[in-house]
Length: 237
Image 1 (cartoon, rainbow, N blue to C red):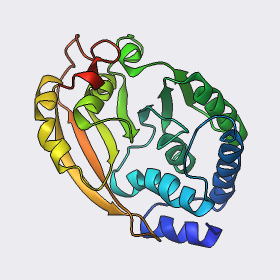
Image 2 (cartoon, rainbow, N blue to C red; image 1 turned 45 degrees about the horizontal axis):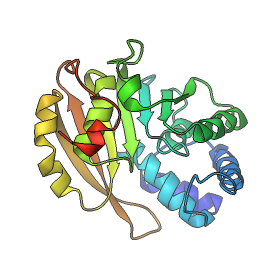
Image 3 (spheres, one colour; image 1 turned 60 degrees about the vertical axis):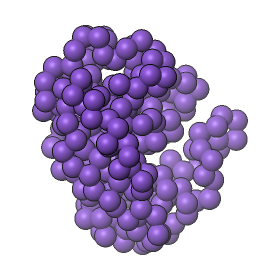
Image 4 (cartoon, rainbow, N blue to C red; image 1 turned 135 degrees about the vertical axis):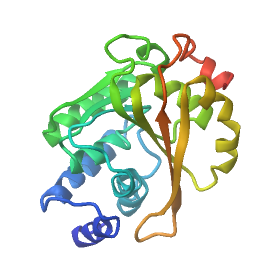
C-alpha cells in the first residue's frame, strides 16, 4: 500500500499519526516476510493485503475504542504481533505485554521490537492459562487485546483474569459473531464480566468487514480461572 493511501485509511478511521509512521510499517512488513520464509507467521504475503488484513484490521481498535493515555495492555495469542504492534506504533504511550505459546514467534517479536526501536513493550513465551495465575500479571492490566485466537467463551477465560476491575477486553472478531455472543453468556457470568458493545467495522480500501467486541470486567476473577492448559479450548464455559 502506498504511503498516501495508508494515511488516507488512517484518516478515514479517525486515527492520528506521525509522518514517519509509514516507514515503521514498511520495516515491519519486510522483516515479517523475510522471517516468514523459515517460520510460519502469516499466510498473507501480498503487501497490499498485509496492510489491509493485518495492519488496518489491528489498528481499527484505535478508531473505535478510546484507550486512555499510558494504559497498560496485554495481547494474548499475539502471533506475529497482531493487534498490539500496529497499535503500539501509533500509540507509543501504551505499555504493552505480548504473549504467545510458540518461542520462535517470541524471538521474531524481540528482534522486531529492536528494529522498530519500541520502548515499554515486552514479548513473553507462555500460555495464558499459566501466566494468568502469576501474581505480577493477574488483574494488572487496563486493556487486553486479542485477534483470531478462540471463541468468545474460551477467549474470555484466557483474557479476563489479566484485567483489573473495570478493565476492558477488546476482541477482533469476524463478520459473523452473533452466535458466539449468545453462547458465551454463561462464561461472562462465571468470569464476572459482561459484553458492553459490538461494533461492525469496514476496513478502508476493501469490502472486508469485522466486529470489535468489548467486554468489561465487573469483579475479581474467581481463583479457579483460567483452568489448566488446554481445558478452556476443549471444554468452554
